[in-house]
Image 1 (cartoon, rainbow, N blue to C red):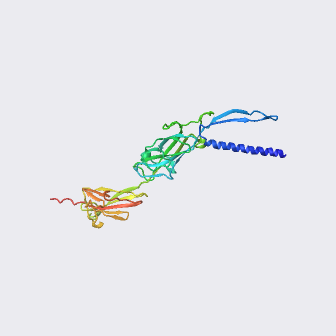
Image 2: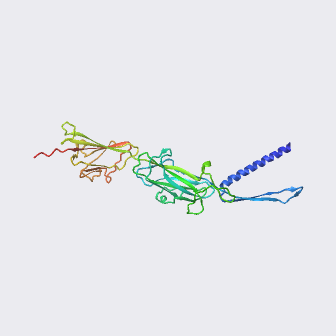
Image 3: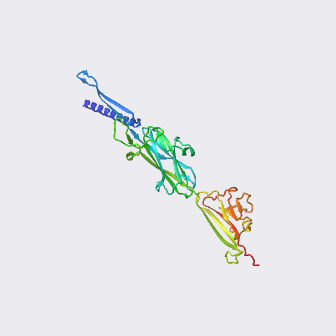
Length: 367
C-alpha cells in the first residue's frame, strides 16, 4: 500500500510538472516572434535486462511560430474636443498599439459619421473638412502643421510599440452651439515586410508547419484584423439673436403715429442666450435718408446713442470718429464697435441694448 501511494504521488508530481511546463511554453509562445522556427526531437533510453541499449531518437518535429494579430485602437483625451464655427485645424488623437508578436503595417480609413453616438453624444453635423496624419512621435507634441503633412498609413510598427494618429478638422461656419461632429477611424492590419510600402490586408489561411499564418486576436471571437473607433468635436458657439424695434415718443400730436415732426426712438437688442461669450461684436446701421439722426440727446446724458452692455454703459460720440470709443458716423452709416478702436463682448446669457432717436422732418412749406 505504501508503494502504491508512492507511485501515485510521483505521478501527480510529474503531471503537475508537465502541466506547468506546457503552460510556461504557451505563455512564452505568445511573446515569441512570428516566423521563429521551433525544432524538437525526442530521445528514448532503455535497458534489456541489465544492459543499456543505444538511445533511440524520434523523428524531428519542426514548426514555425505563427503571427498573433493583436492590436488596440483607442481615442485619447477624456471628452469631445471643443470647436468654434469656422475654426481651422482643430484636432484630436487616436493611439494604435501593436500587441502582436510581429511588426505590422496598418491601413487607415477616416470618414465623418452619419448619425450614431460618439462619447455618449449624438452626431448631428459635419465639419467642413477632415483629414489625418500618422505621427512618428507616439507621445505627440501638440503642433498641427508638421503632423498634418504626415504619412497616411502606419509602416512597419514594431511589436509592443504604439503610434499616434492625429485627426484634423476645419469647422464649418454654419455649425451651431452644442452640435456634435463625429468621425469613424478604421485600422486594418497589413502585411509587413517592405519599409515605405503599405502592406496588403492580412488573411487567415490553412495551417502549414513551416509557413507563418495569421490568427486574429484583437477582438476575441469576433476578430477580423480590423479595429474601429470613434471620436469628434462639439461646437462651442455664442447663440446670438438681434431684434430692432421703434416707438414714437414725441411730436406725434398724441396720435402715437410716425407723422412729420414726430421723434422716433429705435431700440436694438443683441441677446446672447448661450454660455459662450460673443466677442468682437460690431453693429452697423444705415440711417434712412428720410429721417434725421438726433445727436447729443439730453435723455442719454448728451450721448448720441445710449448703449447698455448688460448693465454697463458705453460712451458713444458719433461726431468724433477718432476718439477711441468705437462709435463712428460716415455719411448715414453708423458703426458701433469699430475694431480698430474698441472690442465689444456680449457675455454669456447677456443682452446689449442700443437706443437712438431720429426725427421725421416736417414737409417743406408751400411757397
